[in-house]
Image (tube, rainbow, N blue to C red; front, side, top):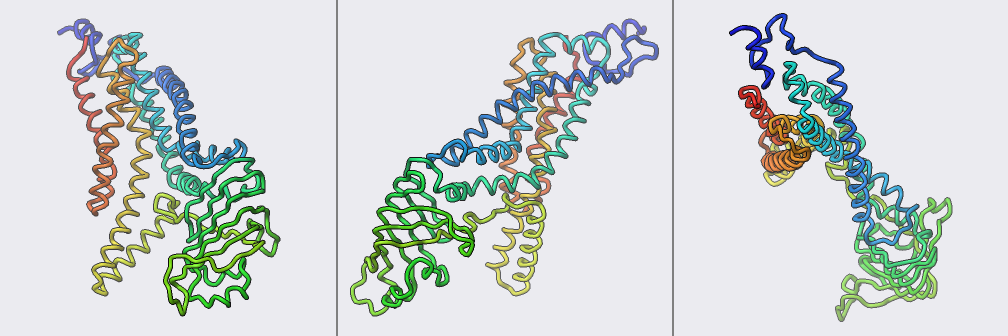
Length: 431
């Protein structure tokens, strides 16, 4: 077959044979084409990123503070943290959507046909996306290891924001802070620093700290075994305490009734659930909501997580040597969960590379004149495969079966899909 015929056949599809020397269709890397692909990819991805980030951030903020009537200036820090936490998912998804838009536009404008006619292989179209995705994946990995855990933990503790601004919330109600550290606070109505209908409950022993807001003389009269209690006040005023009180929030209550758990009192004759024991015209309490939410593995930075892994591994070995099967199983489960979290973050970071690559390959395979078809197909298939396989892999990884591989199952699935589609593209020219 002569050179011209062979070159003419290449013009109808992807080149399947090595280029002939001297041919006008010799494929070679073009920096101009690479920059053109990257410029359009990032343009579409940036538009998608703005939309996704706004939606994710607003939805998260509303969910985080749906029970609180907060003004925007108070809510703004939560909104910023929500934007930051959403980056883990909005970056890869926006690149996926941007790649789908790009593939659809290249097909609809016949630009892929023009590039193929000059002998450009699909690998040369994918190369700039792969290089940019690899660099962004490295940045995403650092972000997921260092920044995201801190933002996630701060967002889980949105109640601290409510407490810090309790005197500046404006007017509204009710406010219900869930129990943390054995304490629960419920306020029926607030108007600036003035509170109405305050319910404050403590269900754990605070190591004798009740004397900080109930006179010791009144406690001595009760002679209780322990002091689980709750109180209700008709009105109150909130303000910051003194330096000696570590600038904690202080609530000056009026018309207070304090209730103790009657079942924990000595010399009890008639058990009842709760009986009012003390009444005050005025009572000053210091709110001590410390460490409101315990840190889980997803809330730990990499250094903390590695420390937790080493600690649970040591506990597991100690329990095995001691023959304590129950403690060994508990430590083993904690160790596996911590190791799985490390690999889960790596898997999520790699989506910055695998999502756009898969979307581009799907678009090249389809070659539809419909601009939006690759976007919708890639936007459905890629997340479906990734998250479906990731959930399956995570379930097995938590049982201890090679977390390093199983947590990457979603990315492996996308790589396999891309390889199959690329093989079909190279094998069968499409007219």
